[in-house]
Image 1 (tube, rainbow, N blue to C red):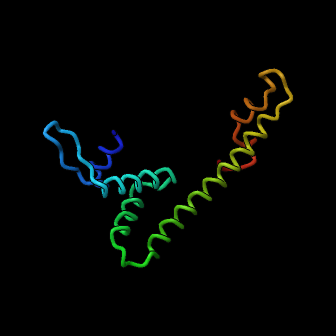
Image 2: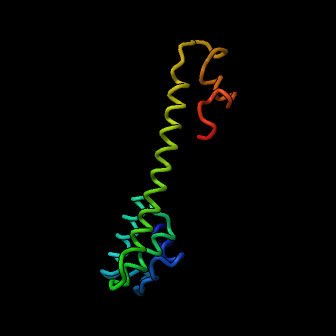
Image 3: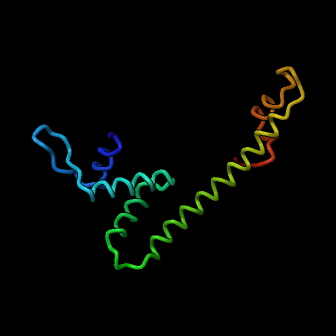
Length: 123
């Protein structure tokens, strides 16, 4: 429920009517919108692209080029994260491949203490 209140606060979801007991009443359209938001969040979309996609979903006569550009930008971001994580994984795997058994010669401690021993400038 905190996520639903948050979506109401930031305008992704209109505040629904309430019962006399102050319970929110959602209609089928609200539930479709919530499912859309939840699924987009599960796929890693940020709030602003979701806001744009929701607006586009409300205009069925528009071409989908803008939605495709939003998804393509998100895909590029995912690819960038995968590349970064792949490099990060390789660096940590290299550190873990330690044959020394004492802390003074430990590869993990050595590399963490000296960024110059990393194979990548950024990770």
